[in-house]
Image (tube, rainbow, N blue to C red; front, side, top):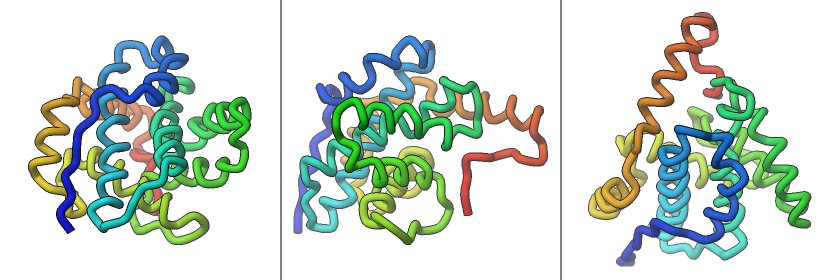
Length: 188
């Protein structure tokens, strides 16, 4: 099956989700925004590359989890950010009467840095999200069969804007304070 992927640089729902967090994220905003745009679209594309359709509800769940998945970095000022990223996402779902999505969104956030394949409740969407983030987190070293042309277009249209360097800097500072727990967000 031949699939043509289109890079979207402005998604109104993502912009709406980001709006309350722009000042909290501060100078890292453009880099984080572009990271989320890339990983969300990589997530969708991985499923589409398998010949499957991403439902509109699943697209929304992925966008919600995407915006909140690393937000704990800024709200708690920590590299141990998985758990602190969950409460604002849960509050958003509650406020939007989307409480029935809480389990899926929570798992997408808490399991997105799992080193091995996620197996468990809501496995399909959680594992898909993990892979989508991993494509971007690995600087596209891991591609999960996504076309090189799509990845190249994604990088050109939504540049890194210092996101990975910011993580490296935060990681180095964390390591100096926590040498026995250098990557607390990673899970086996």
